[in-house]
Image 1 (tube, rainbow, N blue to C red):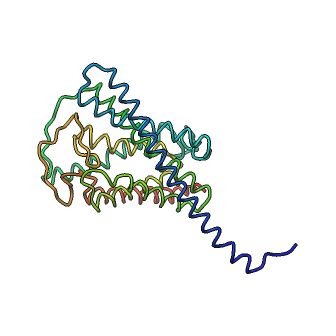
Image 2: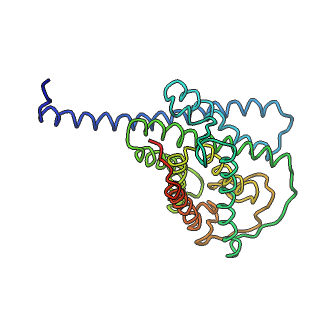
Image 3: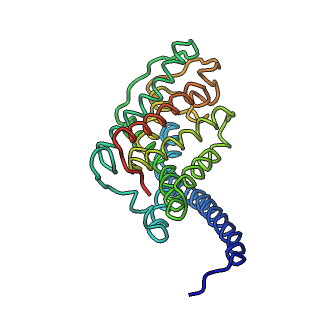
Length: 300
């Protein structure tokens, strides 16, 4: 059988690189479309539901902002079922032993990790004198509804980035291509948030990277969703602080006054502070060291 000539190989390499760039770009474009169309569907659905409620409060309408992300959840799941089966399979329960897989145990661990991460950042800001908090009335029903709503929102972002994007890219390229691209995309999604800064963008990209490592080593998208949910919920609903610059209409604790410093951003919240970068970096290192200690096989 004739072997391909050196000239033929040299000619095909630029073509392969071009096709590789085109596919990466197509994944990014599809992700943007899934996000935009899904958000539109979710907003229309929430507007219909809100119109059926008699005089909904501002707090309820605020939760509808989180709930509107359900359109993205549905669209990403449907698209992945039709076009990206490996990504689709990563959305559902799967137990692989130890801490690997989508299990209720890993989801619970993720909630604890997300709460501790955000809680540490808030505690440091409070001890530093940047936060003046007061205690409000604990509305159990609202807090549970808020947890579900935040999970839907956080789940949508995780399904889109660590689920669809990372899954589609690592099926065709080195897994680090999927990790880097989805993490940067995650950062871009937040560029229009109020009070965005260089530090907050760094933190958001870094948390995307850390959560991608969890998918890579532990094969647990559920843990990522739980960490993301607990982070947002703790910050926005429990402590009443800005979540990526957006303030909750109702929370357990209330922010009476705040001042900006290296450990707290008065507009963007703890996500705009150096402390959040540090705790996120610690999460990434812990995931890596745990995987290395347990000799966990990384996902191909």
